[in-house]
Length: 254
Image 1 (tube, one colour):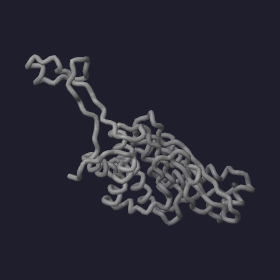
Image 2: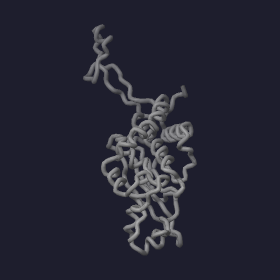
Image 3: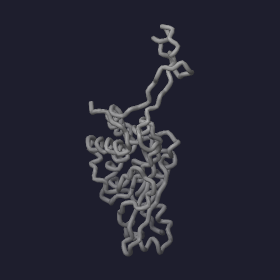
Image 4: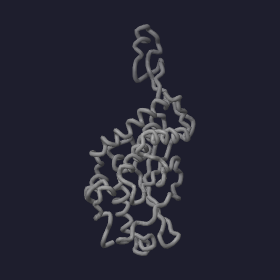
């Protein structure tokens, strides 16, 4: 496209980065400036939720361990060593979270950041409960003039990777993921495809759509998810609901 919206949009209430080049650097290196904000948003959710999620326990053993129960050692008891004992709730051991980043033009970046924080808090709680978590970001649109449908996917966190807030601060919690990076990829589509979906100067970037090809997603975070993400209590209830649906046995609320 000779005129590409991904490069020229500078609205503060539409994007996080002022230019495409800044967004691209964040995509490559992470977004340190948003890491603290994401940590604060996710921490209150994570701390509250983790009070109700079972985690790894340590049991005494006579075999090699990772620590010592000092009281048992001083008493001369042979099972004074501590070994980790993972308490894995019933259900699947791997959880695939698919986040639809496609949103309408009037959704502000603050909502996308809060939505991303809820996803991070959920992933953290699942991993502390003994699950391996994969996070996939996607965007789905419908054609404007036909019955066509188009989806784009990319991995934000593989299940064998640790949670890295600096990386996730951009990939799951920035408006630029969709409004610059995904836009830029769609701008390379063949002209006839772009025409079908209304991707052309002053024509927009298709119509927001829920995902149809998400495959084996255990948790699908939709584009039009009816959650007030910036409301801490609403986001907390959403996280707890997802944990319950994944078979995590929650303790009674404190």
